Amino acid sequence: MRAIHPEASRPDRAVTVSTYTPKASEIERAWHVVDAEGLILGRMASEVAAILRGKHKPTFAPHIDTGDHVVIVNADKVVLTGAKATDKNVYDHSGFPGGLKTQAYGTFLAKKPEEAIRRTIRGMLPKNRLGRQQLSKLKVYRGTDHPHEAQQPQPLALDHTRARQA
Image (cartoon, rainbow, N blue to C red):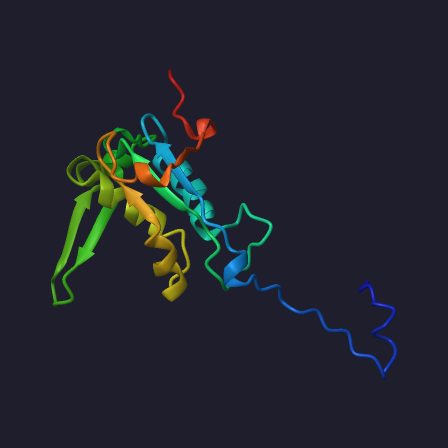
């Protein structure tokens, strides 16, 4: 049975709930650094995508970019679980007939780990202008060095995404 709001039964009063929209002055952007060494790719990507969107903040609104900046280092040391390195494929299409190129995910991760992480996180963001704006706050680097020390990024602990040692 549906619950009826007490004010809704009165025809002279309409119940309206407005969408919360944070003002530009209310949005505060922090910088986070993630050490991807030994982290599972998909689990790390979903956590980072939520931070890029701003879902961890009380001022989150789905139609506004309220997220933080994320710097990922040691991208070449990220881990795939199971047989994804050989069974999962990456597809690129040139746009021309017969222009589909297929590559094993393990090969793609070994050649371009920054692009593999960026592509994985991009798939977890909105597919519109907002998602592209949120993805621009992601910085991925192969080694431990990054040029964002001036922003004083805080380390982000994602220990629950670490691969288990057998």
